[in-house]
Amino acid sequence: MPERIAEVTAFLAEVLAPRAPLTVIVDGGDHGAAATFAAHLAAAFPPSARAWSVDAVLGLTGPSGSVQDSALNVLEPAADRVIVYLRSTRGTGTTGQGERRAQIVIDHHDPQWPVIRHVHPRLADPSQWYLSESRAFFAPKAAGWDKRFGDDLPAYAAAVAVADPRPGDLAVDVGCGTGRALPALAAAVGPTGRVIGLDCTPEMLTQARGRTPVPLIQADALHLPLAPARAAVVFAAGLVHHLPDPAAGLAELARVTRPGGRLVLFHPSGRKALAARHGRTVSPDEPMNESLLTTLLTKTGWTLTRYDDPDDHFLALAVRTP
Image (cartoon, rainbow, N blue to C red; front, side, top):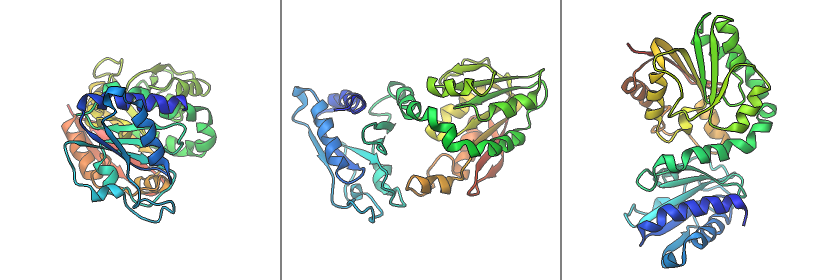
């Protein structure tokens, strides 16, 4: 069994075993993936937990991918059941209530390299899994990231311009990845200003060092190693929807930003286009939905002043309230 599969199933067994008796149901993935993953997960439980039931739900998510919803929709929620959903390469055009009901969601686009993307907090505190899984998600992509998305550089420069960094400012790029926004930020703040890039994945920072001389720090976006109320501009591209607690993330970004400072949440694809790329549709309960984002920002010390979501980019601009 590949090492990565063993890591994921061992962690899930560790957090689920104390909750026995329980039935674990695995659904989603490409044809046959649920059954294979269920078998790996069952084998990860210690002998004392063999009485557990680990099943693959098949039938409504067949090999053609033509059915637009999950088999899990036929199941009523129950306290003695945990649903594991595998996101796959087979885009159905909708997420459906199956994934939304799942307590555990796993990126399964590469069956040899599954990555945990969501665990319900009652099963495991995010501190137990989210940083290691974020690194596992991004690390193998880092070397080829700019080759794949190099055409996005003008969009990043345009988003930086919206943030309006000024000479002498401190600008912080949280979740900087390979550093696509850093040159534009550095040019805007000039020699009297300062730019800092932060990311949790070492491999991404390695790529960024080849692009820019600005200081780079490996850090968790939920616990930034920065003093309070210092940044004039915080740039965050593709960050918030990767966090297990978006509100906590926005509050941490507010902590390091001075009153009147600006936050830009950005992605070089619109939400609908990005969801379609991954075989899903945009859900009204997603944190980047305008009404929900407005509420989240207000509660965490921000005022939303601009919200753009065409197909070719997503951009939200917020100002730090006094």
